[in-house]
Image (cartoon, rainbow, N blue to C red):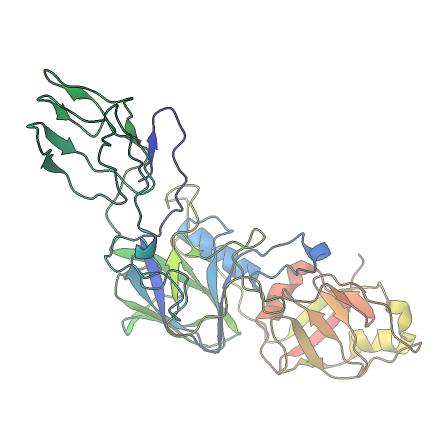
Length: 427
């Protein structure tokens, strides 16, 4: 609830999430992901974002979130999180390292920052009215000394700045709206009205969640929950996703999305540049509710949706170029006829492949040049790498072709050892 003072705009107070998450088990690699931060390659910043973008988008659609809302991307063995009341709770920076400001009184604010935002306005005699302080939660009566006037103060909230009424010398009642009445009352230099601009609501007792992407076991407090279908998670309960049964990466969505600091328009974790929140670890706290749904979840939002299984064989289209001329004709044929497999060295930066070597037609190296998402770069050892969301934006090894973006979601779910074939397509 953010009040404003009549005649001036109210201070902008960051929204506080009603619910949050406490990481109980982080798994092999769990990160916060959204649709990434495209358009910053000129700054040396890769796109990042969910590797299996369709799975991320589906999770948000099932919950009625905007598709840009952040989800948790798990890798291989899932994770476990407890739903908590009060957003990030004890550690407001989202880390369990003591660097955040503790909310010791449970009012949702960091207590070191709980200061009086109102100012005292002095009357002609130099006596100031009582300052309105942050987070006044109750209404009570106070009696001035030397006078019989009773003052009734109504509740105000954080960052509400107002001036007082001045000293009352007669028998008069002063309300929080700034009006003074009664015989013999003397008013101060001005009357200010505090007008609430939002309504405080009770903290929710549960959130909705859904798991998409790689199929896996889902439990709430140890009891089975559905995969691919939204379900309720009460406050205090632990939601856990298990090892991927097929594929690699599952996506956990929550109503309102996962909240984190926005960097260059995105909440996504970028493992290469280090932008965004760090990968999850046990004890870290996150907030929920950073995204605003365009509309409440309604009958038009599906309760479940069909989803393509992770690939048994990865078939990737490839557009030749921009440096296909650096390779022999035999290498171009090998690329589309050779038997490749996904290497265990693959990660969010690139899908590394095991298989036949691609022979170069010339020696030397290129000056560094721009690298696109899906670029098929060939390092000196001759085995191609498909660049994924956290890829570098420049590189000096020749790019023999590019895999179109829409084909990369399947690459995100290809486990080590998955057979890979390339098929040429026109650009």
